[in-house]
Length: 139
Image 1: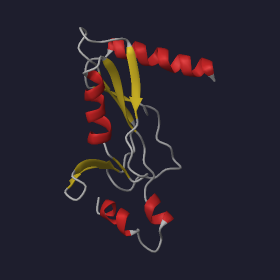
Image 2: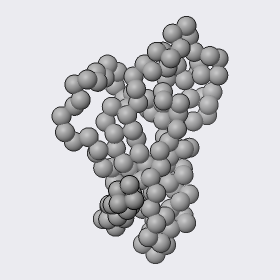
Image 3: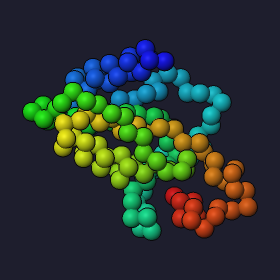
Image 4: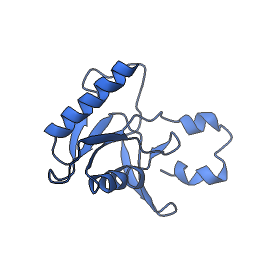
């Protein structure tokens, strides 16, 4: 376990040293998983109600590299996994904004845009979404 963590940290450091700011690294370069059928295209949208930008229907995972200026880089790197309740990714305020904040402190940040299960919320709540979650369904 520790060896895997160290190997992952080393890989992130190597990628950070080779990458320019906002380089996008595709994580799924092989053939698509035949067990998963993506019926809707990936979509980015701004929610007026939540006052935030979201991404939904993610089928192609990526890592976006945000590297600090070389003069402030301190050799530290982190992976940011934006939340969103398994339905959306709060890509800006829980991803990009955090990456920029870390960059200002010399930290290289990798924002992970990960796959989201299609229709999970509808599966979990077949009778309809609870009111606090309903505004996400419009996305």
